[in-house]
Image 1 (tube, protein in one colour):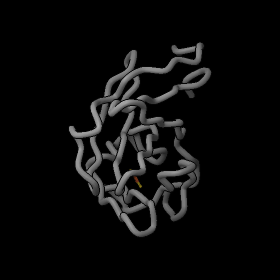
Image 2: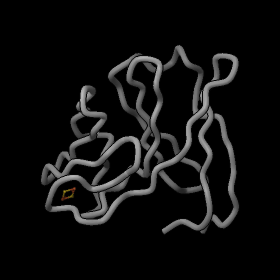
Image 3: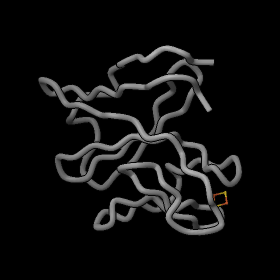
Length: 112
Ligand code: FES
């Protein structure tokens, strides 16, 4: 279980083009991260409704939302909030920073 805040490099900016989402494994925790234009977002990859990878879902760029591939619940890429049923609980969201062409995510606190 992760208990400390940590900042780790996800990738180089050029490695992910706009409109795409992928994952990184950070100490056993799978993070889904997306690029939309020059904005980057990171949330926990596992849907809060069942154990499905959100990164395999549908990225809705205009709304900054990822739609779960199994039952279609939508989650905010900005906050991790569950926006539509059947999911009712959020997934954790994480701060992403771009520095000198590299993308970093900060994972805070204890894993839920
Ligand atoms: S597993 Fe994601 S909405 Fe059901």
